[in-house]
Image (cartoon, rainbow, N blue to C red; front, side, top):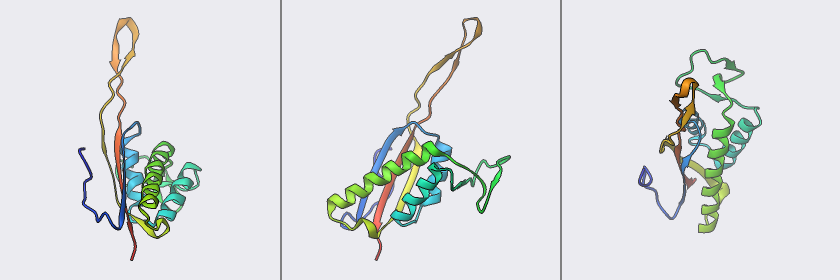
Length: 148
């Protein structure tokens, strides 16, 4: 991931990126899908509710044998992914305030999660063997734009 996936107007938008965050690519994609298009305050509130286990993130893919949550359908509470996405959104908000934009009037125009580098590791096993034990990482990208 060299840069941002979409172009945006620098006068009315603010961007932030988080690289090689050690979270699940599956849950980060689902969290991003949940808050895409929301106003910033609503997105922050939704992420805080997920971290407090009050709101479930609906799973669109890989949701077999996942219990249904009230009002959402099949869903889970990916706390670690929600914390990481919240940090990147707060970084984009502070970038918007630094540029002199009104952060209260902004919405999440673009948010995407892509796989980052894999941190290779080994787990010792019996009889002197070892099993591959890799850590997946994610690159998060957020672009906030002012609403008309």
